[in-house]
Amino acid sequence: MAINLPINPTIFDIQNLYLSKQATVTEVVDYFYAQIELKDKAIKSVVRLNTDLAFRLASDLDKYILDKNDAEIKKILGQKKLFGIPFAMKDNILVSDEIVTGQSQILDGYKAVYSSDVYSLLVNQGAILIAQTNMDEFAFGSSTEFSGFGQITHNPADIDRVPGGTSGGSAAMVASGQVPFAIGTDTGGSIRQPASFCGIYGIRPTYGTVSRWGIMASTSSFDQAGPLANNLADIQLILDILQQKSLRDQTSTDIKNLNSDKKPIIGIPINYFGKGLSAEVRDLFENTIEKLREKYEVRNISMKTTEYALSVYYILQTVEASANLERYDGVRYGKQVTNGPLFSGSRDSYFGDESKRRIMLGTYTSSAGYYDAYYNKACQVRELIRRDFERVFEEVDVLLMPTSPFPAFKIGQNSNDPMAMYLADIMTVSHPIAKIPGLIVPLGNVSFEGASLPVGAQLVSKEFGEEILFKVGEELAKIIN
Image (cartoon, rainbow, N blue to C red; front, side, top):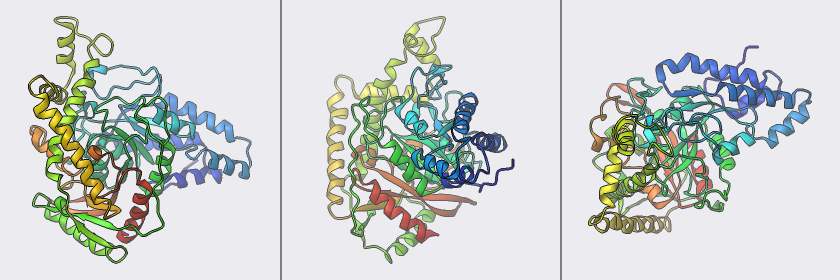
């Protein structure tokens, strides 16, 4: 049976097929595998297809509704919010009995022995994992050019450009219509920057509201998983499923709903609109802000700590990353060399350059003699950054800012310049430092270097302010459209 779906179908579009009995779950899974076959040769967002798992789950769901009438199917769809919805997931989130590598050669062939909370919550609601997505090795990067296996993902908006990173594979799959939604992880911007570069929605939740159990640790005090999708309603639905307290994650926290009936006040942090911002992005934001003023009170505000955020982030990130990567020693985890020193030989042979760089930086800044000068100082400034956001959110409810100083850059443009790559995160790193949520809303395209490229707005609120972000995000989407 031919399936009639839009290019970028929503969860509602797919479930309407089941409600009207126009397609089975197995047929829908087949449809999306056909989309992958058609599109991913150019985009290279997929690292692994989970065909056996996907068709087994699809068959079970088909049997579940086989003899059900319309009213019963509608009730099932109400209970299982993601019934029969295919999705993709970043290759650092564990699924029992499936290979998960974090795109590092040191974990080549590693098969997970348990499933992450994120995966379990989605599957319990009827979702079907069909593919795992490309990423920078161990989520270190800003472009999805640095898989340990050499795979480079291309931006669907312009295949000569990066999709952003490190969740670029997830973002590219969604933007190209290969899946209705995907899961990524965000350490310093790894959901938000790819969402902006690819022209889709994405959210980094408040730290601790989505369980990290079963997610490969990059930077434990920053890491959060979140959804990417082509519309805001799907983001909101998926996040509601994922935000559950977990006893398996010691940083997991109860969800506090800060929604309010009062109209939010929008803050424009002028520090984020400095000389490094491209003229094209600046013009788009100025037009958007003028339109927002017709609906909201908009205030210019000044942050006191913006200039320190990138330095603080990379000190803290590399220290935690170097500690987290200690476990990959060729004995307990990962491949081991057959000749030469076991520990150092395995790590030298199978870690990529960026992983090695971050291990060395983190080890240096946390070593005797430098610990106080670098790491302790960074921890102190982290607290100042957190207080700076608290001060600002006493005056405004939501901040609107760019996600990146520029649209997607060309593949290879920054590959040999680590500092340029780190600077791509300059507008996203302060929020994980403060543990606050950020939502990306696509603003449209700009003409940049001869190409038409997507740009996303970053909406930021205080901890647990996701509902406020969704409210403003919905209005912003209406204004843009």
